[in-house]
Length: 296
Image 1 (spheres, rainbow, N blue to C red):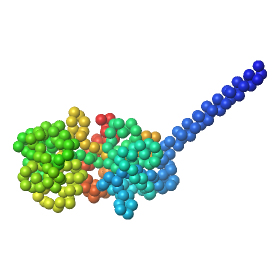
Image 2 (image 1 turned 45 degrees about the vertical axis):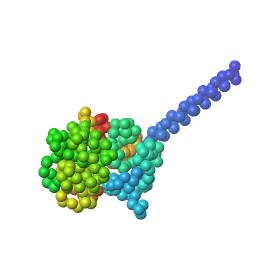
Image 3 (image 1 turned 120 degrees about the horizontal axis):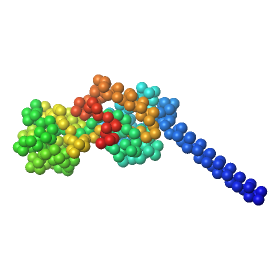
Image 4 (image 1 turned 180 degrees about the vertical axis):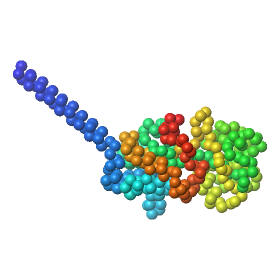
């Protein structure tokens, strides 16, 4: 009987010790879950995952980490006393899994804020809008500022590159008919079609179109400003991009947001957008927030 009592007591003590160890382990994990900010401040370095997406975040041939997103991050983190961005290259699909697995402290590369992603990571406030844009003849003689403007006049023609189904789908969703779409073999042919009058507009991804127009240096074609981004069934058909951190790094997120939101309203931010071919049409509009983007 005495031996049985001793065995039970030992067993209970062992179980209690195991429970205590588990509780202490959980407390330790909780205590260190959100300390990325403190570690980064102490070391002066933060690990940034990127996917070589020009002009957002990419490495130069010399290995220098640069791009619009990176320059914004440098501004934000320098203000926090973190001066070294340790870049970790991965493919786009590896960004969020790498962040969750703690291979990175933050990820960026024009990552769209989407409800499904908001369940996995915490997004900073928006950096920019990545949408559609059209090139038109100088002066925009037909006054085209939306797909609806094109749809309401059946005689108008919209040039679209062969294979560019996403942009074509957006136009068709807003009423542009198949017979209004002129399929061209490549992007340069789109600008040529507008110049020659074979098309009234050429559609492309906004930042690509802006970059190409700058490189063309042809005053006979221009980007239509403003251009209304497509919304179908109440859902935007454009992307809102930003940085992402782990869900438990709320202190880091708060520090980033405080500085990012203030920086977005400065001439320096506008100049940085212009440097990387982002225009006023790509700017975050009043009322556009991560909370709303996550809820859509």
